[in-house]
Length: 561
Image (cartoon, rainbow, N blue to C red):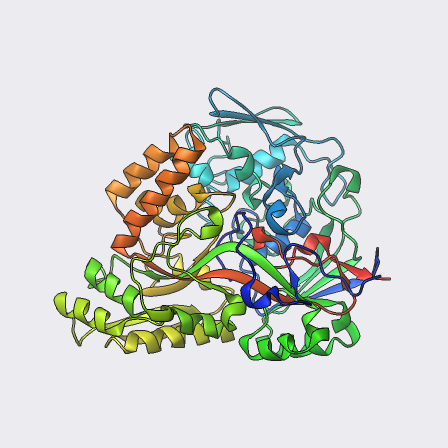
């Protein structure tokens, strides 16, 4: 599970998986050389996770967003394609990717003709405006912060439940036109409106927090039934017009997503590939215990789809907790962490490359390593020396928040063991996957350490460093800055970079800022992800999409004839 979303560039070569017979994200997998997808049938998705949020105002987790793209549409979206092409932003509800004016401080969008909700009513500009306004409501935390950050008056607006007059910064001069007024130039606003928060919501169907279980469909599928932690069933939205949608293929008649399954069970079912599991895919990567069997069986390996991503997994350190407010203690943790052990819990080299910096090389950045160790296994002696210097040679006990999943527990125990070698005692707090980000995103409930991950919302570092490290974006609930890192110098530099007109200069500046932040060690990166996902023998159109951390792009899947 990864907190937001993927941005977009092709990762490095597949390393271990570059051998023949394994499907990389550069091409789709099918059920055979002559397999032809047909319209119809039931696609089964087997998930080890629950869906944290389906409400588009709160949907800011990659797995939930992958599912959400089946249910609702946004002004723009990412194209349905493997590899680097998947990072291309294309029109969705809108006729184009936006028309900037006033130095990119004003953005205008026009809705396509013929776009409708599941009950057949036309989607209007007011529905999109209302959907964005809901993201300001205190009752609906955890979504992206961009509306608050960028829209004029967004810092004071409290959402439509408390201020039904609405936000003046979003104009709807007619039913098909939206005009967004920003307080600063945003060159990539056309990419920002691909997020679920820019999905339309009809006001008369809004049930507040209850909307999470039954968002109103604008995409090819509507919710037929949802039992949280157990099953989500989607059926065709007959009001969806494929002529208005160049992205979603909508081949299956029904999509059934089973939730909260054990990783071993998912792997066993897909390895067997019998009955309805022949028409199934995994939502998450295979478990480490299954890697050897799959790689050594040519037939199984032919059903392994490896998706690239630019997601970085990291250990976040709560800088507001003593003695973690001391940079030397955080640096000691950075030296002590056994990154190779953490990767092993996810399957070894198949899971990705050891991370040494937050910004991955696939974004064009150098792989700096401020806290080196041999083979990424940690340097407990260096860590002990720093702890002694900070006055904590033998008395440091920390609590680690981790998802209560097989993978989450294994990662937590790897952290516990590696920090233990440096004399740090780690207690593990397991949190249900359905509430994990809601819990660690609550600044009062979050403990000392959090296993997390981050992918940019669209290409580049502009949605990476600001969201993860801007102290002004720390919120009591829905917080994404798990380190609660608050540096006035860093915040000032973020503002300066945002004003740069030259994208190349901004990219260089973000790289320099990332190196500066790394010296403070608010997080310890440990893995640049890849996602090896098993599919059933009847599945067609499968490829890993970098927007969804290399998971399968659900909108393209079908069943063979």
